[in-house]
Length: 355
Image (cartoon, rainbow, N blue to C red; front, side, top):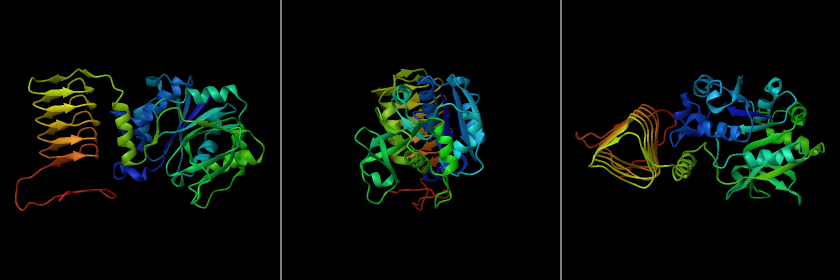
C-alpha cells in the first residue's frame, strides 16, 4: 500500500504566516504538523509516499527531504495550481500505479494515527473508506450520511441543512477503482475536481464505499484556534526534561521541556511548555500550553496558550495569550510618549488590542 500526502494549497486562513510558508509546516509543540502525518503513515506500515506540492514546494522538500528521517521513501509530485483533491489523484497516477493507497491531507492532525483505519481497509473488500468524526457544526464541513451497515450512501459539501453530524476528515483509503472515478467527473462550480464527486461516482457505480470513525483526537489545523488546541493536546502528553540551563531564581511546575542550548534566567514557567533550542527566557513568565521555537528571546514579558516560531523576540510585553507569532518577529514595548501602538503588519493579519 502507498500513501498520497497533500502538501500544497494556499493556507488562506493562516495568512500572513502562509503567504510565504507552507501551512503544513506550521509547528505544533515545535514540530511541523506535516511530520505528525508522515509519522502516522510510517507507523501504519506504509513506506512509499507521494507528496503533492505547490507554490511552497521548495520549503516542503527542504523540510522532508527524501523521507529517510521518517523511514519513508518520498516522491514529490508538483501540482501547478490547486485544482482539487481529485486532481491530486489524477496527477499522481504514475506514482500510485494500481496499488491501493491512503490519501492524507497534510494539515490534518490525528493524535492516535491511522493504523486502525489501514487495518480495517486491509481486512475488508472496500473500494473507498472515508474517515469520519462527529462535529457540533456540520454545516461547515463535508458531511456523510450512512446506511444501516456503515456504508456511505450520500455526501454533501457544507450543506445548509446537514442530514447528519458526521464530518469528513481529510484521510481516505482507495482501491485502484478511484482512478476511473477521477477521470469520469467534471470540475465543480469553483473549477476544481472534487474528491466528494469522485466518491459519489463510486457509490452510484455500485462500488463499496464504507465509513470509519476517528479513534482519538482530530483537528484540521487551518485556523489559529485549531492550531492552539492541537498544541495543547500534544503538550499535555510530553515527557518533561531539561537539556538547557536554568538558574536558581527560576521555577518550573508541570510538564516542561527545555531543549539543548536554551537558557532560562529569573523566570517562572508553568507547564505544559516546550522551549526550543538556543532560546533565552529572561525575567519572564511562560504560562501553560505554550511552545517557544528555537533561537527566540523573551525578556520581561508574559505569554501563555500561544505558539512562537523560530527567531522571534518579545521584550517588555504583558500579557500575550492565544496568539501565533511567526518567524523572526519583533514585539517590543516602548516607554516613549505619546502612549500609542506602533504596528507594522502584513496583509490579512488580525490584531486584538485591549484598552
